[in-house]
Length: 463
Length: 134
Image (cartoon, rainbow over all chains, first blue to last red; front, side, top):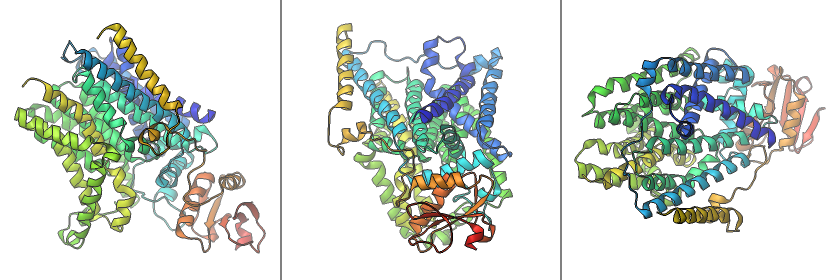
């Protein structure tokens, strides 16, 4: 256990430092307390971009051991510090000041905020303790993700193991990106003795980082009692804690996609370039976690741009630029895949072929039923998604502003995407739904969860 | 809210959190799921009974720069898949191969005693020199 704790703590200390390096131009001149309040954002940005750098290094021929990790972390930090050297860049990227939240909170509002905050902190503490003390329950974690990670540390992106061939036993799902494998493989190697609990420990820290980042990014724009009760609604969902002990990559994907959507929406709403930096960091990471990160990211940003960009069209090119930069970090992996003959599990030509889809329409109903069951089941995700949908419609109706439909449309689009994905998938439908539908919804739920306090705040404000 | 009220609320919340961690409750109750953090060991949660200690021994015995074949004759697909993944974890960085001809070692799951010389690692797990197995 000691080796596990030391290894994970050391890696995350480096990730946190790298994240603060990235954020340094945005926080220069701010008091220490404010720097500390960005710890969640820094951890996720650092873990994301250092992991992406590790992934790219592997594609370029490096192994992903401690030396490459240190170089990647240093490079990410150095990039941020280089930008920090420019006064113009610092001004441009400066983190937002406190928003115009109500100055006088009623006594009951303070009480609710304190109690809810305590609840959030308690669950996060349980999550961290549970993460370090639990072995991943999802067999994909130790059966696919971690073996790939260990191979990346030992051999790098060796075609004998990562590309189909007739001589060596190659890894399943060769089309999947390697961010999660690279990060967890490194930590398990550093912990020594093949301690797979390192996967859950890292997952728990990312989850806590997500909560902290959400609180920081929404602070000042949502009254505290709404913010903390909204976050409590998410963290108290039984599925979140269960997923944080699974070792799965779906939860990190959901975390980064949700924060990507939040950052994109915040850029369009505020015009602060600080959020473009987060769009890039979170978007690049989401692309590097799982293959489905690409279509979901593009779908979500298209929706947010379409509804919110009607009155913010002048901010769309910059958003597109940040997304393009994120996509550029994914390009090396695509090139490697093409060079090594690794196709997607379901060719896009089939997935868009009416004839192919027409022969399997019976899968659609099963997919809808399964996905809806997961997002609407209060014993899984409480009322996160139904509440977000209701609030989105209510705020849009009250304000008559289409932009407030964005949360509902993002959730609906994500739902439609997964329905289509299961429709086109080649595996037996009951099997694939039973083994995956409960976790592919993480991005939808977490995005909805971040929207709830924002929507509630807007609903309670005077029109 | 007064300072006293805020302090009282903070103390009450802290006490509630502390009680959650120390008071016994049914393991399957909702709050029980939040606070109930039974400890696991460092090994993976295999879907079938696999001897992790035996696999570790195999990892120590097979040289890092040599190849191995995983064999589980007659075993169900679940066990075969678990064994393959377990070997990729415990025998790394040794490379797994698909054929006996390319292998220098054979990690086998056998229900019965083998009739070729090999090293017994643990419950039903054996390690053979590939030459002997050919």
